[in-house]
Image (cartoon, rainbow, N blue to C red):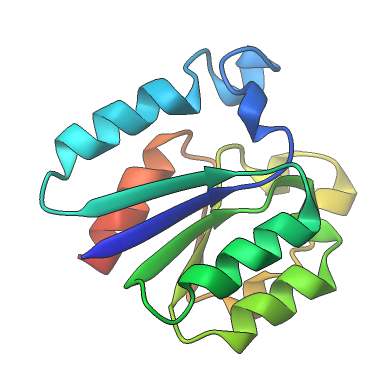
Length: 137
């Protein structure tokens, strides 16, 4: 099984940014844990702060991978283009959020990308990514 993890804007700052919300572990460190937890899965990781680059990555893997785990960050609430990209590919996408978006500011309660995803995991910290991999297994 081949899974692409895509993280959007500001998630390159995990471990440094707002540790009370996002924890103190960098995604690179967590990725090592994920790969050891799921040795039978080919896990690829991509992060960008640029909307168009995220769309390009969805297009690149969206017809050949078994699953995409997408944390679109702030683009979750603003990007019709990312939602359209997810809808335009055949690889199923699961929406992931480290924090509970429903316990945050009102504008974060609406996800534009949800309608194009198979489901959403929100508020379970980095463990949400492992749960997403388990879902597809």
